[in-house]
Length: 384
Image (cartoon, rainbow, N blue to C red; front, side, top):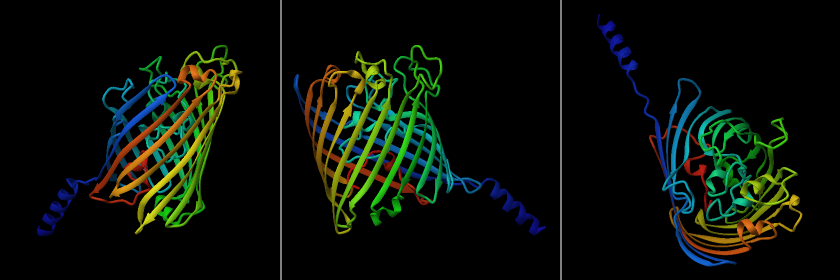
């Protein structure tokens, strides 16, 4: 009888046992004073866009898999129509050692690299495959989408990803059907091995197919806007104290031949273009921690169908100094120049100087798992 009682108590306790999830919180504050000098007017702005809060729950399942839920909110650009807060990450991810499923809203695979700029949209027209459904009012519509994604991982470094997205459509904001599909092939050194500073840090190729409505075409593939991205990061001097890397990305937009003028932003994203962007970064390590970094880069965009000399150019330079644990002060200068028809949309030229303070925080409670990446790796980083 006593043994039977023990068995009943054990089974009863097991039936009501709760699995406490791992909880992670991440926050990033980005505050800058912006001085803009362009061909029409000058301005000074206090800017806290891209400041965000991220929260994640992760739990072991009843097999080799684990599940993660992430909720993130971001303060968008002041001139966007997204309101005071934009939910940039709301997704569920299921993964094991070799497979990753993701459903929800998060960063789309319209950019394969992370460049050392103050904000990730500082060079957006040169570093992202642009959303052809957007009216260009805000940058988040190029970066984030509702995604359905599967990735297969080989040897912890090779990723093959098939993804479908619903990008926001300015003309049909309530349409949540998938309007883009793509394939990504990526080699990336794991976060835990980056200290080794291999010469090749990452290299990737991505194809994105946007199912646009093209007059005179009934075939979905022929009517689509297609983008091909190539990206790589090379460690030029893999030294643990004085480290130098080179980051490069090229985007070929196989646009529509009939778009030979720019009446609006839709034409800009749907005409054929070739975009190149690259940066060189120097990172100084001191006492086995990042001390400061300096970066310089530039971009060039050619729109071959427009006839006139309508190319675009950008130059960017910055420096970040670590004042304390995850607290940086930075200074950035950016110059952009637009020629021909692009001048009508974006103005002739602009000089921008930004003095910034950036604070990042990440903490895991009830830690249970090793990480491919933490919450802050979902978003833009600074000194790394």
